[in-house]
Length: 107
Image (cartoon, rainbow, N blue to C red; front, side):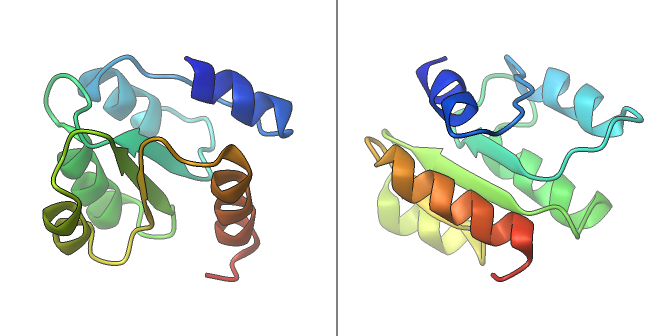
């Protein structure tokens, strides 16, 4: 959970889900979630692509950022549509800047 700790150090409040079903439970809860950051290879169903599709359909105002270190980059970018995609390893400061831009609505 290095990324969670790093983003907390950047001042973000982070909720962590260990798999797709847990992520959906969080997204369906009454708590506000301003942005979703997920690995494409998120365990369970949905995986990261499925989660992004769910968010697009159910919470279209919620930005999604996808990441992967194992997935073919070109295929991922094609499937990610307009979502930002970060190839692992990535620079935390670049990710934090992207998050701030998306949260500010300047995307």
